[in-house]
Length: 503
Ligand code: ADP
Image (cartoon, rainbow, N blue to C red):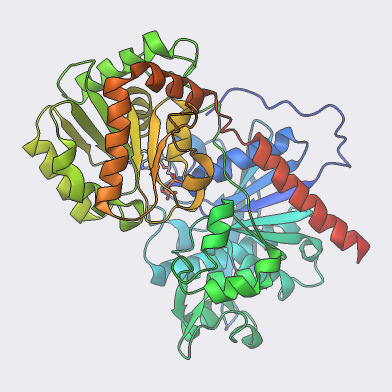
């Protein structure tokens, strides 16, 4: 956890500060399975710097390490009704503050005592019905009425529905809601009976414009997108892509209908956590000024710890990823033997689909000293790969924003990406004539196209190191922080609140 206090702008008085409540299912450092956890941590901090007051509401899962739970403060508890029958459930609120951001963790052992943090959709649907409703109830209980309730992904997508129905006339109903799509692939689809029972939402919401998708099933994300005041997603390109059948995951027409209230704002990264100059997890911290002498020390340390052949001249390709189809791993699998030229090494870190886990383990045994497959989730190894690798693979089939390419750039590790979603918006392709760009890109989702992009990177790395190093310096200096995007969110919040004031 960072020790650095976040300075507040001097001019922001308590009354004028925008009050923002974040509601989501994961948040670093408590619990993180992917980019959502990073955003739930970093964006509130960036908004705080812009003068907002921010509270983050998340479940108190049992899987949250004790070092974070032992110092929580009990803020109160109450019973809340849920389900069609009106069964009552305990809601406890445990609070902590980190650098000015307040975290309220919702305590209920019946829902949050298993899973990592997710279980399976059947159990997760009741879990997140409860969480969405309890979040609103907790805000009322705490007598903290936000201007904006910013909900994240399907797990928090019932918040706008509860807010506009069961909470109508209560303080929290005055807030505007924003629902951010981090990944449209996961939507919370289940039988109408299951959601009707657990949510206890009014029958009229189980129609086609809101929750219903066919005679038997409904979709929590779809309902949230219909009722929220604004929809954002995490890059401009993904905001366009999800309105097409190829990327819309069955919701493209719904999103086209709601396009007037849809916009894309690209993610940043927390540049304090991801700072190669101060990163204590690295063998040798370095900056854009010192990378030429010092990045190599991290490469050597990585080769040594990963039992790779020690050779400064080899090119290391890094991959830190959930091992799923989304990440374009079938392309990497298809070209793997072609990558192995005796001068190229591959370091993989990830868990997921057993098919990919065993493929990378197989390549490790087939190419000893050249491939390292780390089938685990480990923050420290991730930092060391970002620093020690030369280039970084992100050939995703789709990528709403993608954080790994941003982190790689911050560490001067040149990304090789497919031009989709946020990858397209954040990585400018290398242009030899203009000596511009900060990565290598390809468009068509074909193994040969990825191989071509890797070969272009290899050519520059092995034959024109001066231009390569120039690119490394450029990527390290690129602004990948939250500053610009946090301001865009703030402008959006302001415009929603102004609309309210005018109406
Ligand atoms: P997604 O959210 O789709 O998984 P992102 O690129 O948005 O992908 O975010 C992935 C985040 O998770 C990054 O911070 C990355 O470093 C981290 N990450 C992914 N896999 C691992 C792993 N096995 N060990 C440590 N960190 C990981």
